[in-house]
Image (cartoon, rainbow, N blue to C red):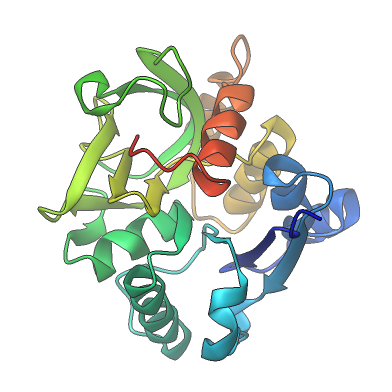
Length: 250
C-alpha cells in the first residue's frame, strides 16, 4: 500500500469574510490548487501562533507558507517562531514552498536581504521572465521551459538580495527576484499562483475601502486582468512537481 502523502499549510493571514463565504477559507483555496486525491493536508494558523510540534515535522512531505499583510522582516513573536521552524525544515531538507510573504521568509532565514519594495508596491497581473539558464530540462517546469509566465501579484515588500546559496529562477522589469530556489528543497515565488481574478478584485476593493490605495491605482490593477489571465495551470504543475517529488533542482 502506498503511504499517504501529508502536507501542511502555514497560513500567515486571516480569512476575509469573502474567502470564508466563497471558499470556506484560504486553506481550501490552497488545497484545491495544490492538493490531490488521497493526500492529507493540515492547517496551522501561524498568524495566531498555531504551529506543529517539532517532533511532528518529520511526518510531513512538504509545507507551504502563505502570503500575509505582515512584513516578513518583522519581529512579531509568531514571525520569529516561523523563521525558527523554517530553519529546522532547512536542516531536515524538507520541501517548503514559500508564496509572497513566504518567499521573503525563506530568503530571510537563508541569509538574504528583504525590505520594502524599492520601486513601490505591486498589484495586478504581471508577466515574469524565467531565467532559463538556471532551469534544468525535465525539472519542475516539465520538458519545455517557458520564456515567461503570467501571475497575480499583490505585495509591498520584496527580496532585495539573494544569498549565495540561492538560484534565481525568475525576475521582472520591476523586481529583481520573482522566484528562487535554495537547493532542491526550498522554492519561493513572489506572486500568488493560488489566486484567481475574484480573489484579487475583492482584495483590491478591501484595500481601497481601508484607504490604503487610491482608486486610480485600483482601477489600473483591475485593468491588467481585462484581457489576460494568469498561467494558473503551469503554476499548478510547477508547484506540484516541486512539492511531490521531482527531486532534480529546477
